[in-house]
Length: 351
Image (cartoon, rainbow, N blue to C red; front, side, top):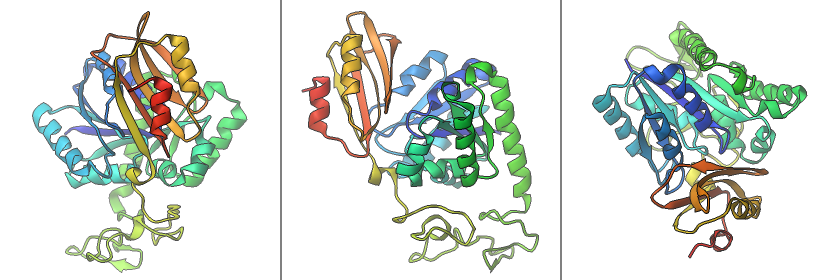
């Protein structure tokens, strides 16, 4: 049976870096297929991961859990049928909801193995405050939370973020060590242990997470013919329940923090993407990225330079520019809560 691992994380947390570490290590001898979803019109990370010689199925122009949910389910079935991988790694959009990704996988009757959320320890509190619904959802439904950039902050800061994570998801297993000090085997071992523990606990669980040999959940009695709990047993006028509340608690006892109902990423985030033939120096590119305003959560791409090709990543207050392999054309993707497209074009000298 194909193992399905989901590696999620908010924008710029380091999902792709983690996946590359795993693929270049212990997974290099497994038959692995990676499904990568980009929020935006152009896939960038797929190019980065192709260096690992892994089959990549990219799904673009939206988020797995909203506009592309149909395509995503079809892609899952097609990948399993055509490639029969030992392991299927899914990298959802950074602004997607992990709960919706899980639902899409279970809808095609695949078993989810590892559920991982990568959290940037330096930006966790900011994202928790400003993008609570999306950021918290990824932590809430993860089995393993891996902190990135812990080497750049104090132990007190790490402990503060771990406390926040356990307030959202008390059962999450956390990895706090610098990735460079951990082997890929150690990371995979924690991921698999978390799945074994979760699977054992689910033997007497309903979908709301209640253990009950009488098969009762949220006040509903379930027999063999009626095995849906309150999360899924509704008519067409009342179909949300445990995953869509304006108040802060549902019958399952989880705090979902949905202040304005259930939102999709397409409702709260926007993206622009451009092909470009422009050539930039490293210094010019750095200055351009430094001009992005506080509404921009993520920018990435690859462009020509006078020294070859440059790959870049931007999250607030952090810019990474590095050499990359030759591309057919330059690509720039910008994601934010709001975007002034005219300003973006002016910054990058597009059009």
